[in-house]
Length: 307
View 1 (cartoon, rainbow, N blue to C red):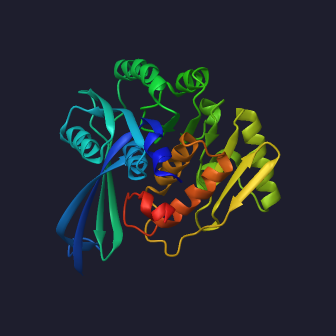
View 2: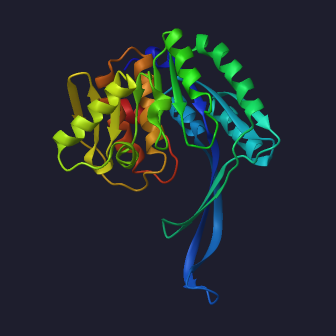
View 3: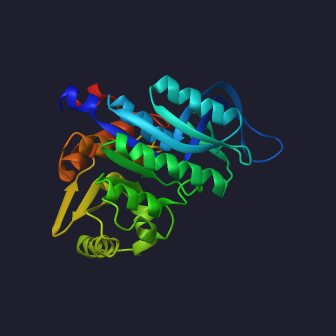
């Protein structure tokens, strides 16, 4: 992929942002109060998560990312804004004083996640309406839209957002959540993981059955493509009359958290550069194989992906 094409690719990311906090420590004994390990914290780290991690993955590939989201008017919201500035993401974050910014706190001992604590509140309707007006304005300044749904309430207007993207002739990619996929009707591509797809379509025993279920859902939602990411089984793209499977390329799986963000970010950048969906999936599969060998919500850099 040529550097000029990547540098000129513009992706608008909209969705739920969060702050990923990591406490790293040493475990040498069990608590006398309960049968749990005692972690002596030796260092901490903070990284942007959710839609913010999608945006930072886009910038890591040297493309341009704009981020539209809602945070609380609090320390964590200020931290996400600062992290986005540091990453080179143009972020429009609506501050809602009635909520707390979503925080996922992970406690890591001996290179393993021992505990995760979540803090979250859904944003108010007024703030979401203001964000929708900004979305309509930002559409004209991008090549591809990513709607990153983490089920935290930031995409209450997602049906309207897809309508506006289609009217502006912008491909719209959705990372879905929950059981109601009718919200995503008329998107260009959705990217459920294996567990999310099973929750919506039911289980399957054979590849033929999986293909039938995927094609039925694709037709029902009027999607150009449906990409099921399947962990150690790789990922499979379903388009009208076509199934494209990519085998997993992970050499060592260290941490899958945030891998879906890397996949949809890479897809968006490739489509913004003019690639076909099947080609974009091939490159995104390579990116997934790189990022799962890193700890926590991480990114894949252009040099790693196209070396």
